[in-house]
Length: 169
Picture 1 (cartoon, helix red, strand yellow):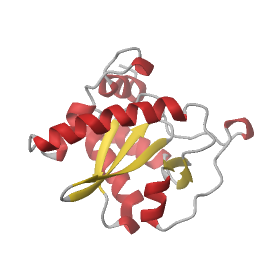
Picture 2 (picture 1 turned 45 degrees about the vertical axis):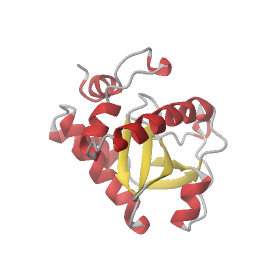
Picture 3 (picture 1 turned 90 degrees about the vertical axis):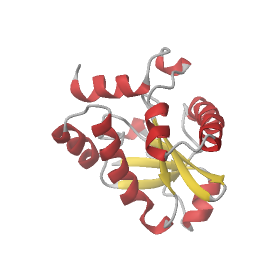
Picture 4 (picture 1 turned 90 degrees about the horizontal axis):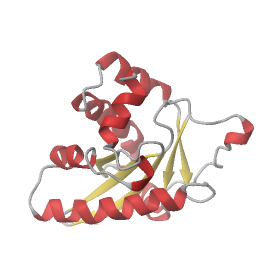
């Protein structure tokens, strides 16, 4: 099980009520190596995007928001494709995406590291807005987010940390 920790803005767009947050103390941590994901809805004209950030390595991933009803499935597919671009072998990328199942939509409240991740999301949002103004394609923005260092990652590239976590290299 992996939690998709959605902001209130995204929960409203999804038209869903969040499930109760999983508590690591009760033995329900994410089975996926990348951990849970925090997601926010970005309104960037002319489209709406969802920014997802991984709990452990702060890997950012942009996915088109619409249609909202298929967002969890499309997120998993986009993550699989993104992991391949980072050099993760297909069998390992598939194993990670399978380990994420089932995806549970929760709220962003009630997590110890939520402020730190939301800080990363704010930084990523500013970068994304600027890159979109430069007419950069989403795939290139995702590649750039994989190279965006931050303090919680020890000033390392999230893409390299993900590859190391998943592949042991």
